Image 1 (spheres, rainbow over the protein chains, first blue to last red):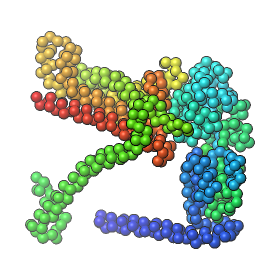
Image 2: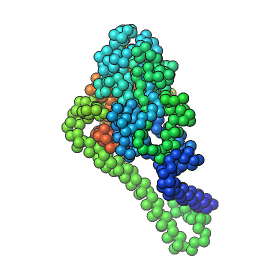
Image 3: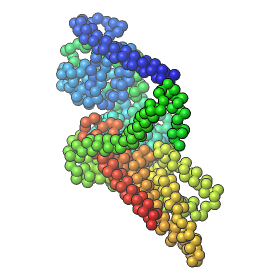
Length: 293
Length: 317
């Protein structure tokens, strides 16, 4: 009995393995055939099922967004494989301009020199909220004050209009995208004096909510009731103020594409998907504000 | 014994086999097979240790070679993602691990030893049973739970008690660690104290010593190697703990101070591994930290084995 059961099971397993392999092969062998004619006629409106590979490369901060997009896109276009290599914004822009990637990813605006060959499409904006304990009387800081606190130049809340309470600056570990964004946007790279370095946004929020003198940073979408998000230069952080650019501590997530060339059909499909209403929820889920509605 | 029990089973399973000789052959094969299986399982453990050792050495050495052993071990600054001049000094982590462990032992060993003394010599049966159950439960609590409670209760308490900006300090980590190492210290020390021959204590009491004098002057020295084993076990546990202290120590790569936010060897690896780019010097340096930690733990185990051997020899004489 047991033996026959085991035999049946293993037979089923090996069959499913075989069929999986077959499926993969079919896809791969189809890809070049369908891609060749399509690149000659790129204007044909996206047919029901495309195949091919889209290479994206760039910003490490966009990892969460890209993973969400790729997963969402897979459901819509199972025949297309999208690869993402987190190499950094600089390498992403470079890869887009030399053609080694279909879409370059940058978590900063393109420089003027880069715009000569590349087209910039802002798909989303990443706002970083400065959060303090709910009992803190301070409501509003300037970017310079935030930077001074981060550098350890201001160590007491009374220096920025609060109570006489020592400041505990709580942030993320080296390598975190949120930390990179915060330090870059406040101009405090490698100068921050942390009193705690925690490994998740949730841990930062918890620490801030339990420490009266704490100040920390978190991506806008993770801010919740238990902490207070400060105004920066009089502007409260919200989706609207991030989108219209009035909230200062924010950065764009950019798709960089060659201005001269045309995207392959597969890449065009992914690009369109990233700007579609379906993708908007994915951005929100990944913690950023979509640049369109 | 075994043959008698197993013979009917063989008959049942293989009724069509030829008698006597063939059956014995099959049984021999089975016996061999089982021996092989046991050996394979034993070898598996050895293989894992060897694999981990070799892997750690291979992946830990490149960064050490690039940074320089002395700079790596004695550097006071850790700034792996610094844009212009990254620094890879792990002295803060080493000292923090040593201080933190020493602090935990300084608190945990006396408390644990006295608890063991109480359980072994003084406690009424019912009370001892309750305490023993509590200690066993303490040992079973996952370290993340220690960390969570430390983070939400202990850290704010440390902050208010000492008027600090943030309570996530070496002190908080030491307190958590000392509670975590208590169960192993208590149970090992109690076993050692229970093993002291009653005659020793009775002789001491008969000579007019008080009970307390007897426990400290007679029982404790007689159980000393067992207690030492308990201490080394505690050191090993404290040295290797990561999750709980990651949540209470603040994780900033400062040189250790009781009221400063600090990072241990273990937490240095755990907190940066997820974001360190594959192949980067940062990631390789994390492997090197793992190698250093591994050597520390090995050293502790060698010492532990030394004590255990001594205890065995001491028991025989």
